[in-house]
Image (tube, rainbow, N blue to C red; front, side, top):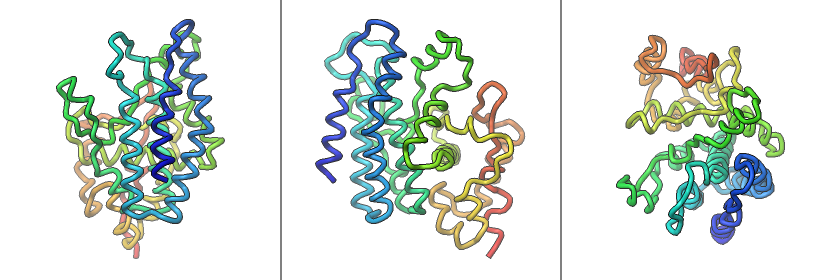
Length: 282
């Protein structure tokens, strides 16, 4: 596994977009399309680990694997002239792989392992060039892709989020239902909100554009109406008891804490958490 993960990270270099002629957003879309078979391979590995070997050692190996993706999302050392969107394909790829790993660990109820993954920071030595901290949280995988926004405008697609659209479409060949990705995105969002260090460490849950207005609690939280299940699952949010959420839920209600939105679309954290039902049953 070590060799596979190391090779995977090294071979990503082959996906670097060097040809700048033509519309750059076309190249990004084509590039992430070509990456799909490799993404699916990684998903298979994540599933195997989640099912059969979710020990601390393997989780830390996956953490280091993710850490190896982060430098691709920034300017390489030898590049002096670059544009903000030059690495958008890598941003998309890293974000998608991270989201799938979280989704798979959640699906297989590997809560303590997921908590370990999310609580470990990532070492990104290149950050020091910009005077930034070399240790970063998982918000390093949060990706705003200007090239996709440009594409939306250029082709007059009028989509609320092409990023969300691509994640949804690509999930169909992943072997994992899209609801698991949305659940993962929501957990990442809530955990970041609960532990918010600063406004820059917020997680933007792209996939929740698809959650719809009438969604009920995600599975992990619906099951957490049981006290014993809540006790097992609470570590994914980093809370101890349901009342730890009171202040945040109140802030959302009064709009003190703004929710992500796509024009007029948003979501209701209280509903998706099954907040009022948490740990209320035997």
